[in-house]
Image (cartoon, rainbow, N blue to C red; front, top):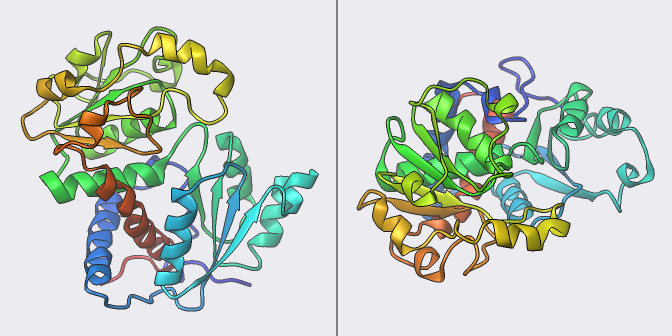
Length: 312
């Protein structure tokens, strides 16, 4: 049987809310240490002889490369699975797949569709399960975004983050981050694409403010961020979304309304001229390439924490 964290109970990371504020801060600081060692070519093999299974029901470039490279850099090994190459694509119950895989590896990362699928897998897993992305949440990306903000601008508590785009897995995870870490989230989306009040609940203005005008949402923000207008799985809505979001392209005017030292982020891939102009994403306020790299380092810290607990 594979061993999980020997210092405490089995933990999963299925949404940001699975961790406390203190645990998120620990992972961010640990990632900074791991990144520093990486930049100085110092080995960090804390997960020597551990195995990560990566299960992809949704394709990805950054998720695969960051988890696979990260696990190898920690001294472990990786098994790559897709629905086409496993029993998941042949109608095996996800509970049975979880029972089998988790007896053979130390850690599982899943990138899938509904959040209920990863929850069902985790409920029957004997090892930690990480959400690499679901329709509802993208917690690893937000960890990387927070790490990037901390590197460039310091603590995020008390700051303002402007989300310009639809109610997707990123915006809902940003909302969890605002609740946990003490910053304000501004959200602007066209009618029909806004946050679901049933999912959001009653939020104070110190946590969430919604705007009809994306320019107003950016006003005074310390971080402006967005995503593609059409997320994976919604391609049939592409033309309708292009029309609805025509005024929600993050441009120089929006960045000028933000704080003078505001940074721009995008989880990528990006469509220049749609959700963001080339002037912004390739401009001096953009930190998207640091943000993309930080998936690697923060996920190393996350995997280490789930398997070994806090390290001195």
